[in-house]
Length: 298
Image 1 (tube, rainbow, N blue to C red):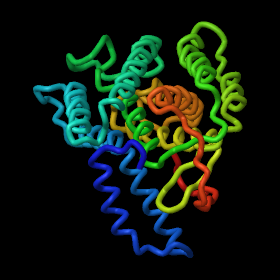
Image 2 (image 1 turned 30 degrees about the vertical axis):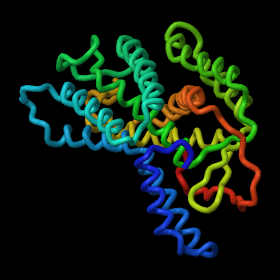
Image 3 (image 1 turned 135 degrees about the horizontal axis):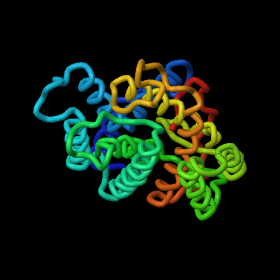
């Protein structure tokens, strides 16, 4: 695995020794690739998965009258998780920089959106800025953690990746629209068209175990956005935050939020691209196959 941490290198070496005798063809080979794919995805999601587990546990079992407010507990838990990720070398300090940037970008948006009434948090605890508890930024950091980890776990490479300065302009316009659409026209559909034009020809190459697969990058954006939407339903059910229509009675988050998460993926990819410069696929003799349509891809 390219740019992997020391812990991941040891895991990868042991996994390869274990899988050395795995068949190279047939149904068993496909099953092996799928299992490895699922395990790598789970490993890439570890920060977000642990955060969701903590949110659900706090919803179910955290005492209502505890000395430490639930939101403050969630903030402390998020900080501990992040420290452990670095201490156990599951993330590098280089990656931590971009994760912190995700945190800052997300917190600024949270401050504005809660002030506009787009969603809300329970007004409790002291570890907050205005109406925004500090743990909220870690939810964006979880997306950043996934992005940087999946990049190296799957040795991602990109054919036809657009120039980074163009993607930076597009990402800036998307981020600005999250704010400006409250005052002027909402340009999300124009921005979606721009994403299609800028990234439409880009193909993502990724390695699971022995084989390399390919997928249009725009499709990968959509699949990750769907995954985040599912996680958002868990988070709102746990009471981490609520949309106005969920205050009286919880219900699943509307599918229209997929558009927002899809656009957020562009910002995420652009931020990660400044840590790991997108590289073109290597020319080799490894057979390539199209990614299975049932897989949830980075």
